[in-house]
Image 1 (cartoon, helix red, strand yellow):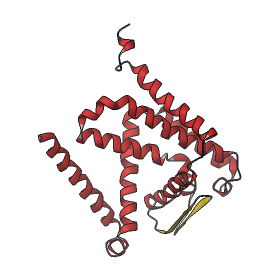
Image 2: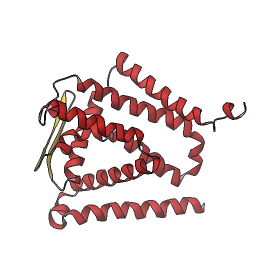
Image 3: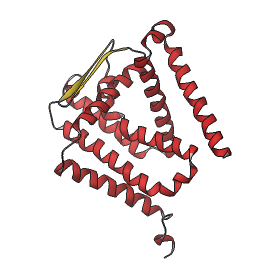
Image 4: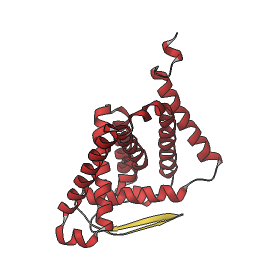
Length: 219
């Protein structure tokens, strides 16, 4: 069957994504684990949830064995955010979509990206599942049963969500990350201007991206 032998056949996309997932799971089991990178994403997810809740992050600490975020508020959403929001997979998806807009020919490498993306997702869930069997403090704050139920339902929603919903989630999370970075890099501006500074940063980046994409498209 010609359709099954060409890269446009849908099963090729699923196969590449699954292969990346399986390879990352094997790497997690048999190779040194990038724990520091995971801890950074974990703590950034806490910080992102704080910012999206209208709070302020006072400090963010990251080390190989763990990290800590000090903020002016807490909630179940903030505590469980790293297990609900797959930060690295979302960022990878956002960067890929943005790159496609600027360089449409990257679409020829879609299967390669899907393999890489599957690997990112695989590492995310490998670390998450590994933490579920430990006495992780995040699960003890609101009770282990409640926390695991919320995490399971949230991940089930993401797994069954439509592509449109996932794009919205990615865009929302990406905007939050940019505003959070702006708050960290421009503390005095945020102190004087508040939340509008974050929105201005996001809009400025969006405008720059649109103009750059149009310029590249013209060439």
